[in-house]
Length: 201
Image: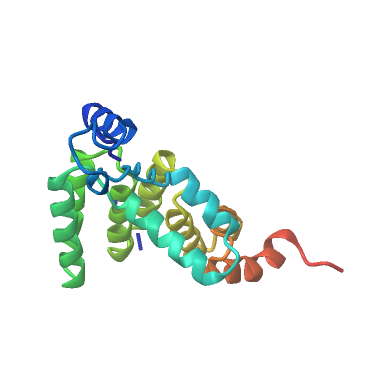
């Protein structure tokens, strides 16, 4: 589980005037005239990435877009929070879940508006078998970023482990609406739907 620079106006004006001048008037031979500057392509917005994820034509494309989204969500905007989160990850790898929880407590206090911080602390609580705390953190993450498909999927798995099939199915469906090609989520929906929605006669 689960943190364009436009050319300076002066430079643009200088480049534009040099291009507009007839050969020889700029003081340079024609062959040495500066090439026209190209504006950098605008960065793809998170909204556009989520739209591409919903409309992806195949699994590989969807996985690629999902990774781009995850990288955006991984950005806390704070070097300190990023460092603490990385140390928490190392603690989790070493199975020192208590230390990981302490570190993520500091992260969520430092950056309370960072949805991924709450999502990651939820993972620690899950590993500590504190399901209620994990659910609370995932719900907080989803208030901050309702499109966090990994948080929805994790919430579904926790509800399923609590045998709350209706809430699990709802969470999985929310994840699938955002990431339609999320295979494990779709498999879970197929298993749960007949029990929750009722079987056709």
